[in-house]
Length: 111
Length: 116
Image 1 (tube, rainbow over the protein chains, first blue to last red):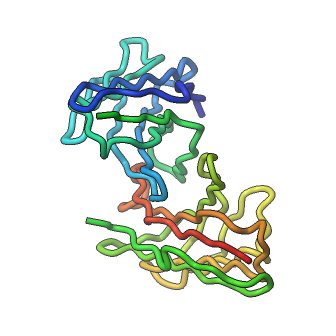
Image 2: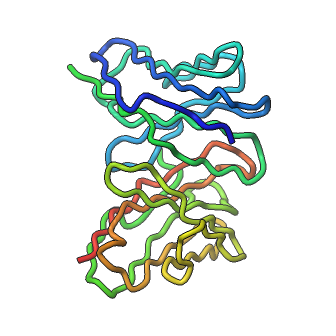
Image 3: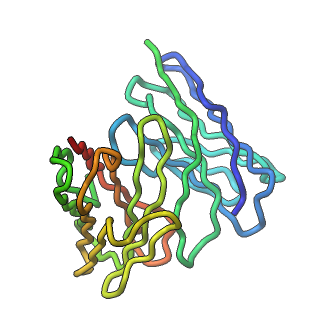
């Protein structure tokens, strides 16, 4: 599976956009990019995923570069409740998919 | 709302006792569930894959006789930490895909285990 690299921490002001980068330069053609987040002392929560097109849902937007070697998760208007560790995971579809988690990015949203 | 329920959310036990943690899928059937462990300031580490009607698959380094997994029905998997010791104190989390082969995992809220 492709390895991902994320900055260990970031911060952002409440109400501003939070842009969380992820590098996955060894991604293969059939692998998707998934994002989860984990608020302190809770289980992880699925946010969004994509293959090569940009994706948007009610939680966030996912921008994947044309060469698919990196992506950015965008929280358009961050709130204090978005403070969490954000995990970028790359995996193929189907089969015995098991998400494995790296260190992620600890995002702190401040007032 | 939550689609995977985990119970209890917090448990304290004495060293040498056993603790059972339940993971339920609430509105779907889960033939496969996953169990993770998370130590403070660390990421989630997969412990085992729970398979309904068959034996669990354990990750390397995880003792199957210490962490007993039972997946007796399509909506319930249990993790029993046997003869718990202080080093077993951790945050245990389960997950399941809503549909077989779906790569989106739904996680329980986690169980904080403290062994005295």
